Length: 112
Length: 115
Image 1 (cartoon, rainbow over the protein chains, first blue to last red):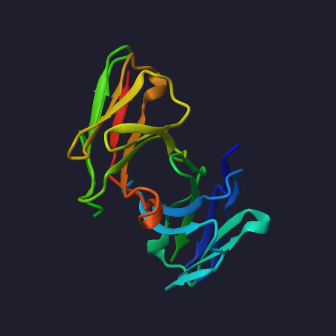
Image 2: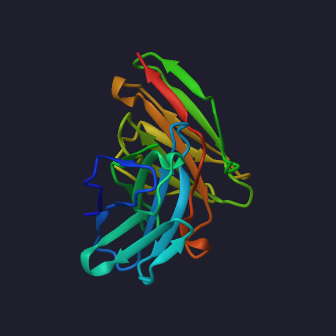
């Protein structure tokens, strides 16, 4: 079965705090892709990152970083020094050749 | 902006009616996927079209159908609407596997309300 679990429904932090959003996935495929998307209040999903199953190298992009661990089937997302503009719902997703599975999302509230 | 457009923005239909939603993909993208996002939930994959053929489908009944045209734009058709079909319908365009590995770019969505 293919499944993505985002156990954190909602997280609230104060600006400048670091925050990690958890994502655990299940798949029997050997080739697959993992994604993170941001959905601000305006509603449009914004692509953040894609990793394929053969590349476990962690990635940093500005204040964002991602930790992919196949051994634990996790693909966690950390925002360093959070800002109010980071407030949104964040989705983790799993894709293979022609199907995609999104988690239920984590709502991040960053308070000034 | 992603370059993916959807129409209409909002739509209100009555149970039992049929609806057609439209999507124009980003230039150069030949793969289109459709998703249903109920309030407070993650997007649920409906199906994907590649070169005018359906090549992947989620757990949705046959009354959800689609088309992709030679210019890669797409339609989602839903027959016999039910109250539970009320949701945000998202279209995403991408290049196929092997070409930047499915970076999907989403449109703003169509909000469908079934009464």
